View 1: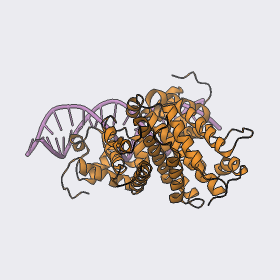
View 2: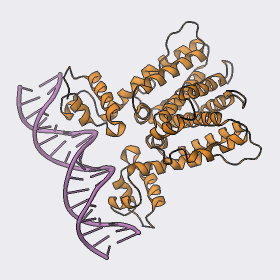
View 3: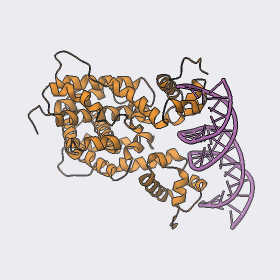
View 4: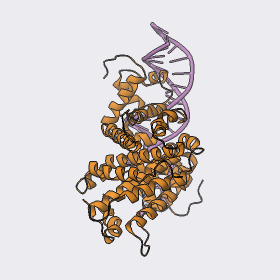
Length: 185
Length: 185
DNA sequence: ACCTGAACACCGTTCAAGT
DNA sequence: ACCTGAACACCGTTCAAGT
């Protein structure tokens, strides 16, 4: 079904997101991704190790969206909040993105990604432990929240009782404002 | 492989957790669950609609563990914190529990489960909206956190930099202490 | 009522073989 | 280097048939 442009990792990830939006995570198969690209399933294995790696690449998309934007004069609390909002926004653009994030195993050993991740918080005076803890908490909250937001049954029910945007903000602000300042252990 | 006791939903869920611990979510198949019970796979369909329902039943286990315990004189903040700790503790007892929670679709339309869920918070004077928002935030944080905690690569890396128990507590307390008191909108 | 056996459509993945 | 065709072991699920 694909006007073939060129088969590489980027094209495969794009096609995978297409299938994900159409079929959901349960229906995401390499065969459908291949069909989307006008190619046979085994062809994908030339570019990608296996389905697990494809899922990791997809998850990395949202991870990238949650990177700190370089905002002048922003406190570390501001940075955490902006990054969380960006991550949620990117995730809400695609179906089942939270499921993808939780199911996928991280690409880089996390050891590689970490320096770049925590640098902006260290600049602001936090210890390494604080930076990692706070960041882990914010990411966990965000991904967990979107998981509920994207769960059909949950959504149908909660949508008439709470405002998702507003409630996400309440939790996010509560979380970040509750973190201790640089001095604490 | 099963000394057959009696085949019912409870036995099937137990067997499924056994398989989950041995094989992880990827390896959790109805055929293996059936084998664990000394029975053929189609037999399960008499007791359970399909695999999705089985996953929902498994997720409900953790959901039950996160119910409010009736503690005298506990504030709503105390209640939220105790419930979150209990949920995390129950989840950490089994492999891939966070993945199960996120992949599974809720059993009850959530409309049924809700009254019992928010009652203890309403007693303490919160509005319904507040109760739902705060609870959703705490659950999202907890499930999201455990997801990272159970991710092998994340764990291996983070375990030498932060203390999971301590960091979970930091985020949890920050979150709950940041929620506004009963009056706010 | 409850379970088996056989089958169906569909997976992820491998691998020889083509170009 | 990059893709196809055919195959393997394994799925979830259905359904007639047994007891």
